[in-house]
Amino acid sequence: MALISGLPDVGMRGRRRIAWRLLPFVFILYMVAYLDRVNVSFAGLRMNAALGLSDRMFGLGASIFYLSYVLFEIPGAIIVERWSARKWIARIMISWGLVTVLTGFVRTPGQFYAVRFLLGAAEASFLPGMIVYLTHWFRQRERSRAIGCFYAAVPAASLVGSPLAGWLLGVHWQGMAGWRWLFIVEGTPAVVIGIITIFYLTDWPAQARWLPQDERDWLVNELRTELQAKKEIRDYTIAEAFRDRRVLFLSAAWFLVLSGSLGNTYWIPTFVKRLSGVSDRAVTSLLLVPALIGIAGTLINGWHSDKTGERRWHAATPLLVAGLMYAILIPTRHEPTVVVPVLLIASGFLYAYLPVCWSIPTMILSESAAAATFGLINSIG
Image 1 (cartoon, rainbow, N blue to C red):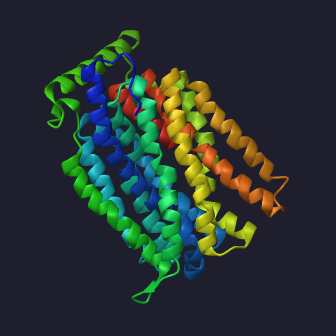
Image 2: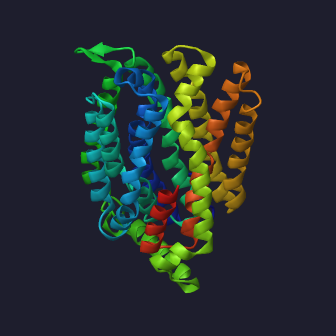
Image 3: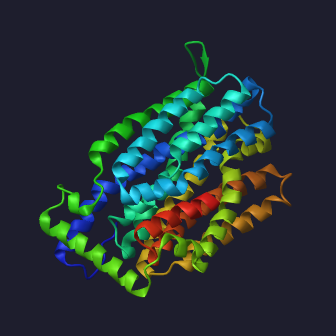
């Protein structure tokens, strides 16, 4: 993270130490999480035929994940704020890793639907919980960059997952098809990292023995000052936050964004394969393009938003660019040499919206109201 000019020496040392301690680890957490969420899109290249799933049945299975996910989203985010981020996030990772491994053993469409429902329940509140956790450690002026480092894990998961999926889909170990091993191999790390999380993360700066006393005191005071400044303007209850006009606008925006991006997330391997006619391994190689664009976009846009202190246009511009490029797909849909590059580039641009989007609610909300609002916005999406 770039250092903020004007910080005292203790603040510069503290920011650097916290960034190096926490951001690589939360990046790994989300990358493993996203691998487990989107591996079904790669597995579908072979799994659908093996289980007798039509396109509509596969889409239903992908969507069932969100039925249980929504039920536990808001309560889970509040648990992170009021109880323990470390324990709750560890619980999420261990349970979703086990369910992902279980997915590798399904035999019927009904079993596929059941494990997708369980996976949604297991993973619910991870995203808002992690955003809440980052607000415990990073001040408002550095938060977009911190969330950008966290969200860079989404395209990075594709960077790692695409070639891994391409390789695993081609194996046949112990009499089991490669798509089954895809779930088993990618679910196991979540269990391991979940156990590590219990011992590695610290819930609050005041509990951080790895921070020197002066750096710990500085951060606690800075965050307390920010909190008091927000409360002097307005101290929101959860119900008041849910009714706030700005929160409702953000919820509507997130709904529209995810309506497009989730369809792309689950179907882009199938889209690329049908449009281009290339092999499964070539498809996974092509999907490195949006991953690389996405990593650069999340980091650069988050950094520049913090540097300038501007949020709205930094959130809107990636959406406008991606939306216009998706619109180009309609008249060019019969021209693979045009439509495949445009699809890949638009998918990469979309990622740049994410870190700025999630830093906006923290400008006005704090504590349980902020945690519940993160859960609400993500649930509506």
